Length: 127
Length: 282
Image (tube, rainbow over all chains, first blue to last red; front, top):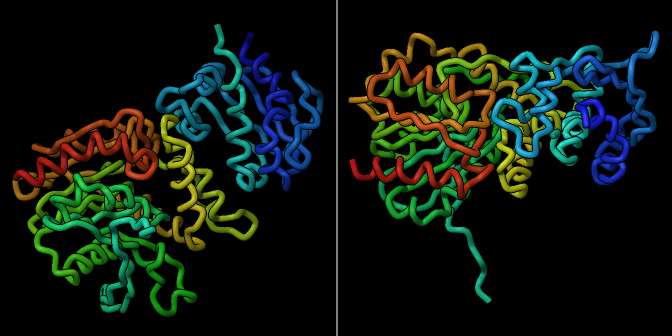
């Protein structure tokens, strides 16, 4: 399973975590997450993921974007990540990930997004 | 059935820091060598509750952990509503020395974490003779910032929740979930703008590059311990600092992050007990 394939499992992973959906219940936003070169467009309503569109979408607007290299997501999603690869801000500090756009909804719901983007850790390790 | 009581006792001490009256909350336990513990930015003395309750520590040490002004149960000074809180090297150093003096502590050991670790370095630079030993957890002469503190205090973002969410990544993945969330809870309870005000010291006023070279460990032994998962003060930051200080003891702590005493008390104990034994035996 590629890294992007793992991220594509996000709807199932989030649906299996009702507590995380509960914690995001005030959140409504459209945002983008890039797994290496592959973009994903997320529509979140009241903490639930109502759509996840994989691949480029012409003129699709987004409130904010989280980008990470393949190496960043690969290490971030290890069951027990190595020091310096275990948090989104550890990744941005080392220059392998970035946040762009209007970051207010991200910061207003920061723990939710950290936990959301860490969900692929629950999948089997990449072979 | 008898009540199940923790061994530490909490009290308030009245003192003046730089001429300003304060009512400072502290907890203490044990007897022997005074050991003053300094909490991290935006938190309070509860971070040291496991150390205060550890008989292996309190049989040789009188452990005292106080809440910095504006933190925990130490209320801000009168008129706080007309000021913006900003911790500086001078005000932080004054608070610690005033507490030690008001409590009549004879050459105490001071152990601080994060900003508490940074100020311990300043105590080693400027006031070493007043202390028996100094222990700096998660400390370095300087660290690269990794977020914009403007997000910490504004009306459209919950200050407590954003502070806790930001620092949650500094807790090692191996931390027991209960201890991780207790550590985060303390951050959620900080007063508005207090974490941001503490970071003024950390980022703007407390740069100790060059100055650490003047530390003389023959006057006062210095111990530096940093968790491997701390990406704010990295192990490299601490080792770079240690390389400039002859005679310093330095230790990288496995499976620990930025809050060793509260995020994983049992693991931290493995590292801190040998340090305290050395200090007690000296």
